[in-house]
Amino acid sequence: MGLLNRRPRALTLALTASGVLVAAVLVAGAFLVATGGSDAGSSAKESLDTEFRPPKTFDVDQVYADSGFGCDSRDTMCVRKFLVSVTAEYGPRASLPVLERLQREKKVDLSVNDHDVAHAVGRETAKDFGSNFNAFDLCPTIFNYGCSHGFFEYVLARTDTPKEAATTVCETVSGDKNRLLISGFSCYHGVGHGVMMAQAYDLQESLNTCNTLGNFQAKEGCWQGVFMENVNAGMTDRARTGVFSRKDPLAPCDKVGKQYKYQCFINHAGWLMRVAQDRVEVAAGYCLHVKGRERTACMQSIGLMVTNPVWQAQLSRNAGKKSQGAIAWQLCSRFPAAGRENCVVAGVDNLANFDQLKADRQKEFCAEVRGRLKNACYQRIGLNLRTRTRDEPTLRSSCGALGQNARICLRGAGVAA
Image (cartoon, rainbow, N blue to C red; front, side, top):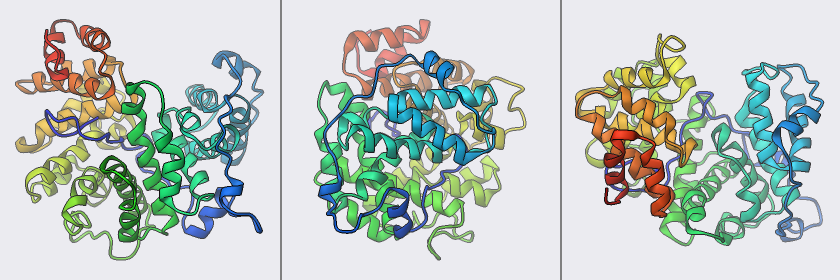
């Protein structure tokens, strides 16, 4: 899911479908309570079960039909309890698709924070199926990786250090290389979210904790989770005093150490939109004051929003009147010329975050893009596919779905046409 042109960087996780990321807890003490905490008289290691136990096999339609859902559509506690019970039996790949269907059928109102509910599902997943990578990998990416984040809340509360939590889960990746490409980075990203909450939103201490992890992929993934959680706090007025500033919309990204700037800026759009009052052109204009590679990251952070349907509803008057692809291109057209390509490639990146090897929505978006940026759009699809699989037949098949633009996609994937 790289965000820099022609370079498959570490995975970058998209902004949440609900417009903001809402943390499950506010401070370190509450973190322990929310995740089951530390039991008196027992050590962290004694309370953490790392053995993998697969959930029951299931058919989602049958699970939905047999579920007996009876909650009021706005009753968050009831919805959470119901989905946790489904998770305990069938796992998150059953419970979260059931939640999607309940939303589509308006049995669960969109006012119910689905990201927060997915956190609860993630905690239950770690508890019932073991604190290990196989169980972590059960978590779908829907609801903005809430299941993955909740999984780490549970593990972090039961290990002595974040490094131990990361080792327990992320460094037990097994299986094919594609699995590592897709899931490995998001694993460390989940660590970052948990670290930030456990450190009571102390940004520098959280980054210092990330730096105790073993390799660069682990550190960068953790940094990204920290900065996403930091913006989450800023957008909901829970950040530490002085971290964000309306007078300096680029803070804290213009003040953190150079090694952190990319991950800070690529997660900064939520705050920029708050200051800019959801005016895309104003928010992107702030990024013009950033230099070099970090300007690219700043522009692309906003670009990640343009293909998000809920952000579209917030940023465009045409939401619901035109296709999502058409709205996304209209939003990119409001960027300054210097940032328009960044918007296009980030729009593709956001869709790839959720659709993985399926390119249907990306195809719809690229069909709307005009001028020289159309080729950049299709090429980006190929680059994103390459970050998820090295299997050439799979790459050819996915790019082939783009019809006459398949050759451009293959070029982005580094495969001869």
